[in-house]
Length: 346
Ligand code: TLP
Image (cartoon, rainbow, N blue to C red):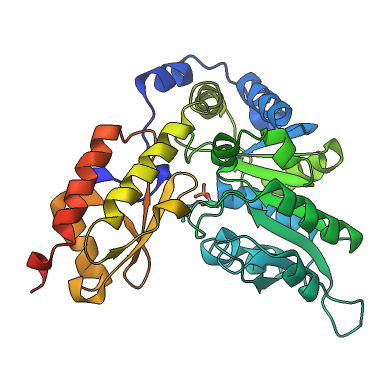
């Protein structure tokens, strides 16, 4: 089976497992796990911030930062298809009591004027707008890279209105690979940045939050409050260190694979796919109604030997990652051609 559902499906390699087995550990709630401490320092340094915090998941990374920056009843601006609104189980409202102001973007990228228009004026009727969250790369936008110039413009609007800025940088290193811009340049305008080790970087678990030192005590306390304080977790941090040392430099391979897959898909009759829109490791495409329903199409793909996720009505996402080779991509292309053939229409 070629699994293109997500880049979260990768399995730790023997070398990564070896690094995990060798890790020095201690109780991280006491701040005594040397491997976690090393990973946190590494992350802070890479992103040009004072300090880092290891958290169990990308959702927890985002949610701790929302809780840090906003009070119950505040309004947080997010893009309409952002992970925070679509895939975090309603946690911003249930865990932090905030309401989300959703602003539609262009393939996930917000326009400065649209953000400006929704920032609330101080008035006793209005919620306070306190936080702007961006996503790099934008998942539902199709792995779109947030241009640095747009980030700067949005940051300026946010700052001049007293808003804090958080980056859901789950796939920040894909943006780095796509543009050559340093992670620290992308991170600079933000108060907090979270990024995931368990997506394109191929670690089994874990995310990091980085920020200025002044937020770290609160973030550490909030991590405990949210149930994310972990103990001898150096075994997992070691996988993260291995991922940062060995898996960042190879991300452009995944991007080439995604482009190649998009080209193959765009040549299959009944499939609508734009290879030019592929910027990183995701391919979004739509399949014509005459070829089946969403569930039928997913089933045909599974029968042909390839897994992917539906992201809408007959709209699909294929994600390339560490565990798929160039040969797998060619094979997946043939499987898609078989799965999306009129011969399957019953
Ligand atoms: N994304 C997953 C699913 O949850 C949709 C995926 O397969 O792409 N931010 C972004 C932008 C993400 O894409 C994800 C995971 C997260 C946060 C959450 O990370 P985890 O799953 O570690 O909590």
